Image (cartoon, rainbow, N blue to C red; front, side, top):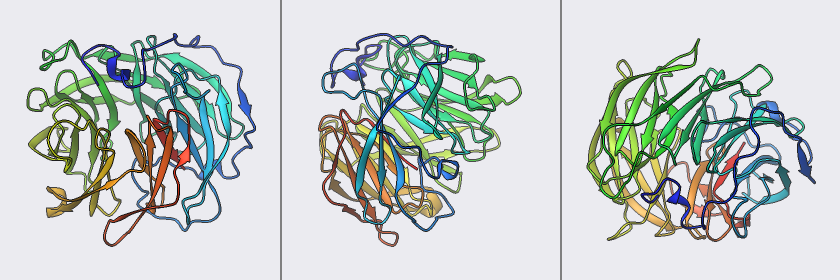
Length: 398
């Protein structure tokens, strides 16, 4: 967030502690946490599932936090939510994971992955059937803040904010992680205005599955790589530059796969990007308003509905969610309005798998707010009182 290696956490205090021992299975502990009844059917919710399912009974919700800050959690929070009402019920915590600030689930729904966002970063695997921690692996860098699973399910991708690098780990049949197969640091171009070095903030796969893209706030660049799915090695194929000082943080693709939307944290803008699936080349368009007025509001993350009709942006400083209409088959965003988030500093947002709910993890107010999403208009309606969750920085509904 700032220019220092780990100063993105200046809003919650100084970085504390070191990563847990890596590459060794960790003893798991779970406080008052029943096993999920339907873990195998869970799926990632960075955007709604294209095949919306009918809600049926409570669904699992996993919550990321910082354990090394005052008022933080003790590990990965466990909860459930009613997919009809949006009501959230707490169900305990998975301990044995240091600072699980970002979470992702394997495509088969059986394994949860968490970053350990500390000076010596790590990624950890947790078997969902019994909440057993399967062990951790070093990311080879500092303060990992994002991770994702390649659609084929064989590779875990992670971004080290502190050291400006991206890492690849193999995923074993059990869901556990193998030794890192690649680590690439963003040594060029030079850092943007106000930045002292590279700060990788996201590492994810394009919708076509042919490329993986890394968003770097420090170098004002989105890097496109080709992943060797046999060896787990990365080959850079292109770079897309934002305007100097934009501070790109998070990229979200339109379902059509030809356009993506970039949230720029430092200059308080969003940009529509054209994407060529054949080459992996991304072209960044002109910056657009977040609807939050003058100054910066630290925009955090964008979501796009599964039908490609609406997009939502979390604004941390403004404590709001911006709603956009998506037009011209994804080529244009039209600002509609902003809605109060019912919390302080919305760090991350996620849809429920059916797209009917939007969850916002509010870091400073230590709560998660839930909104009903109107499928026709895209309007958001708060679903009751927010759920209390210590230093909530990630909400992953399954």
